[in-house]
Each structure stands twice: as C-alpha cells, then as structure tokens.
Amino acid sequence: MSDVTSTPHPSQPPGRSRSNVILAILATVLAIAGTLALVSPPASAAAGSNRLLAGETLDGERAIVSPNRQCALVAQKDGNTVLYQNRPGRDRQAIFSTATDRFRGAVLMMQKDGNLVVIAPGNKPVWANQRAGYSGSYLEIQDDCNLVEYQPGGNTRRVVWDRFGARPGPLPTSTPPPSTGGGGGGGSTKRPFSTCPVPGAKSGRPYGSNYSFTDEWNVTSGNTGTKHAAIDIHAPKGARIVAPASGTVFKVGTITSKFGTDRRLWMRLDSGEYVFMNHLNSWDPSIVKATSPTPSGGIRVKAGQTIGAVGQPSNGSHTHLHLHLNTRGPDSEYYQPERNVYGNLVAICKG
View 1 (cartoon, rainbow, N blue to C red):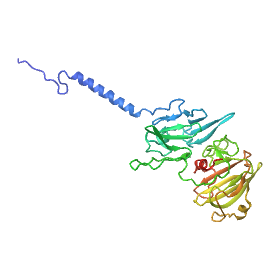
View 2: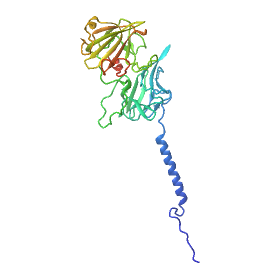
View 3: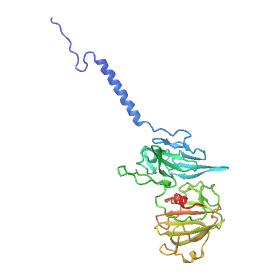
C-alpha cells in the first residue's frame, strides 16, 4: 500500500492557523474599541471651573461659576439653563435663561464648531447661540455675570458672542453658515433704541436699586409661571420716561387693582417695531390728547422727548418701568418673549 500524504485544509495553512485566530481576535477587539470611542459621551465641564470648553457639556444641576463666586450658569434637571446672580442677604436672582424647561434632561453643550447648544433627549437641538463656524471656541462666565464666548488664536482671543448681544464680524466665506437653533437671550445686531428710556439708569448696580436694570428677559416668573417679556428699569416714582427712539405714540390705557392704577403706553417706532410700556405713574398731557385707537394714528415724538413718569405697579411691587419690544404688531405686548433689548440698553444707558 502506498503512503498517503494528507493535504492541509485551504483555510488553514500549516503553521499559520493559530496566528490567524489571534489576529482575528485582535481585529475584533480593536473594532469594538473604536466603536466605543465613537459613542462615548462628551466630557463634562470641570467642577468649579468658570469655562465650558469645546466639546464639554453641562447637565444635571452642574454649573460653571465666576471667579468671584457671585454668578453661576446652571444646567438644571428640568432642561433649562439659567444664569444666577447671588445677592447678599437675598435669594439668588435669575438674570438669563435659555427658556428650555419643557425639555427635561436636556444638556448644554459647547460644540467644537463654536455653536453653544441646548440638546434635548433624542439629540434634538432646542436652543443655540448660532455661532457655528468659530471652531475651538469656549464659553466663559465673568465676575459681572456676563457670558462670553471666545475663540482662541495665538496670544489673543476673539469675542464671538456674549449675552449682552455682542456679535463679531461676518464669517469667512469659506466657513459654513451657522447651524440653526433658537436665538434665546442673545439679542439682535440691530439696536432699535437710541436714547435711554429712563435717564440716569445704568446696568451693573445692585438689583432693585433706583436707576438700575438687569437682564430679566425671558426668565420664568416664580409667581405666575409665565415668561417675562421685557426689561424692568427700576426707578423712583415720578422718574422721567422718554421716548427711546423717534416714532408715534398711538395708544394709552389703564388697569386698576387694589394697589392702584397702572398706566400703559403703546408706541410704533420709525423702524417699524412696537414698544409697550407698563407701570407708568402718568403720561405727558399732550400725549393723551393726541393718541388714537389705531396704530396708524397718534402723535409723533422724537427720541428723548418726555412721554410719562415711572409709577407703582398694580401688583404692589417696587416702582419700575416694564419695557417690551416686538416686531409682530401692536397687540403682542404681554408675555410673548421675542426681542431682548438688554444689550441695546447697556450701550445707551450710562447713568
């Protein structure tokens, strides 16, 4: 009988079967590791930091805090991101929010493309400052409670956004346009007001003090649960109110409660936008006589012209002017947050 020589199986060359198995296992391990790297969550901001770096997130009541510990940006569990200011001897004051409390579990993320975004469960963006295109930027909370986004570059850094409404120049033509998302409290590049509506007012003063104002636009009221659609300028009763820009006063009205009477005023600016003022103590007599029940009528006023005086709100709170601006029309004056003029007021109200 002749000798029979066995032939190796084609898939298992002599001496290589074990090494092939090892290589296959290593390839599988590397593939799994790569997959895990792709799906791993973004890093959270460092505890106690005053910066949210590119790629970092805030959620679950975590916060970034100003160096002086007086201001904190908190990503709340209800989905809202709120900027709080500590007030000695008083409860902390909410001075800015993304108004995303309907999206429980949302996180605030400083994307690597420069866009600051609130992302709801399901990877759904529900608010953004629309700064995509400024890659590598980071968010910083400062001692004056300002939120500023910077793009680093060499030995300098460039401001690309802040909550007062600052905006940089146009993006380079080679950069994709900003991603979509709600504008929140960032404001607009357009400044409709040219004159401080309460002469002598200035930002940065203690909350509630005379001739002061803070960014309370779009903050949820703890009493009513509604969004505050205006900036409140605190001032003593009788303080002068002037037209913040040239336009037409077309309507005045009153509302009465056990605390007294609120006087209101509606104005159409030459820019086409509408101003609503509440809590006036009085109107200028000439204004009352010339107003019209329709927006097309009324009396012309110039920027800086006296139109009334600050009064006591009908709910009995401290005296202040409630100032609201909108583009929708003359009747959308109350609790419809649309246009933040805080940055505009900071620029023109110098005390």
